[in-house]
Amino acid sequence: MDKYLDIVQIIQSDLERFDELFNETIRNSGYSIDEVLEYVGKNNGKRIRPILVYLSARVFGEVNKKTDIAALLVEIIHTATLLHDDVIDEADLRRGKKTVNNKWNNKTAILSGDYMFARAMNIATTNKMYDLFDIISPTILDLSIGELEQMNKSKSLDIDEEDYFDIIYKKTASLIKAACHCGAVSVNTQDDKINCLKEYGKNIGLIFQIKDDILDFYGSEKTGKLVGKDIIEGNVTLPLIYAVKSLSDDKVIRLKELWSNRKDNNAISEIIEIVKSSSALELCNNKMNYLKQKALNCLNMNIEKNRVKDSLGYLVEYVIEREN
Image 1 (cartoon, rainbow, N blue to C red):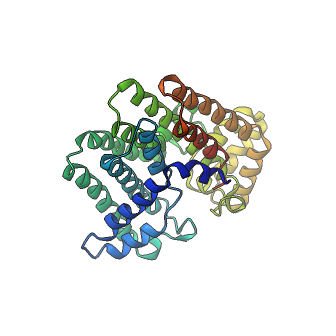
Image 2 (tube, rainbow, N blue to C red):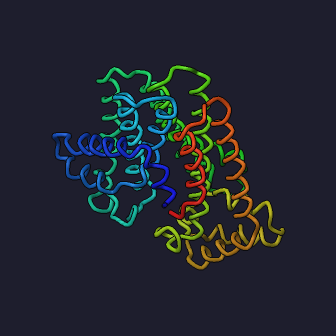
Image 3 (cartoon, rainbow, N blue to C red):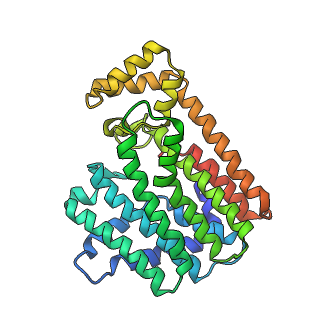
């Protein structure tokens, strides 16, 4: 069986209920934005964050309305960030479909994202789930700061690994960690168990971003996306950081020359070949496996063995092995 299907079968009814709730929530605003939101709702991904909410809840007990609200909040926030990111990145496609900024315009995409952020906060307060609000609010701050720090710091090949991990924690892992946190608190009040799920979420979130950074060097070959998108945008990712560390001085000088001319297609191709020919991607895989073990250790530390716990473990493998 497909590993993804194997993971989600245990929460299939939860995801079906979630899809109905999500679509109903974003498609019936009562405003002219409905057409845009319906379009956004059709362009769903793998639902990794709602999956983590439900698995993090079910590992402790039965899901409830609060779990559904938690999954809804996390996915709405994620969708809002994608709308804004596509404007920032001047992206034309997402998952093979036109982005909102391409199909409509930048203003529509930004305002739709703003609406979804506000909608998430409204749902949390209307349902008086203030503890979820307390988790989500600082996460939104992290998401914004992470993107800003990437813009300001991640342009020079001199960026170090510590800065890189700080950026990807904020812009990616923080929301995945919040998904696990929200799912856990929806059914459990034991801090030691909740902390295990938070740490697990942080590590799987870091793995998720590293894998994305690796896939950027393969583009349409594996992902259906533009190859070298991070290079074009000037984002120094872990493969580039490890390449600089592992290459000879001459190769590093050449890489920096190409980086200064990275808008050129030939320069992009050569940067990709230099990175692929180095040990950088192997070092990235080693880092993901290290974080995988940390994530699994979190699960094993304070959580009883059951089928849901097994699925959380399988999900780490899936994130590492995915090709899109």
